[in-house]
Image (tube, rainbow, N blue to C red):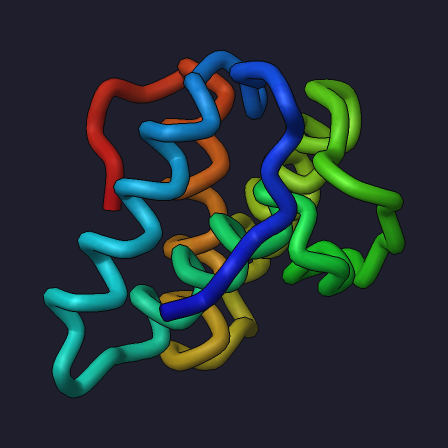
Amino acid sequence: MTEFPTPAHPQLIGARPRSLVESAYQNLRQRSVRADQFTYGALDAYRWTMGSGVSAPLTGAQTAGVPDLERLTSEIDAAVVQLEDVTQRAGTRDFTQGVHDALAWVCGLSDEKP
């Protein structure tokens, strides 16, 4: 099981409580015996949002700890731009869609989590 840094007090990540984001990550990870690119994108997005020390999945932006809402929405914007690029290959597009959908849920822009 992947461990993420946990603050002493409950914290929001985007618009969601940290516990819900961690649960969404663990559930997706457990459901995905043979993960596809969409799932990899969503998992990478969740890891980044929880401050795991990895860079942002699309832009590569480095953040110290949990990214703030501005950083999260900037990554969603990058996903939208990439999804509008009709020359993107299917695998890359699926990964980007996974990132987008996970971040949109984390930020409260969507009620459907990957």
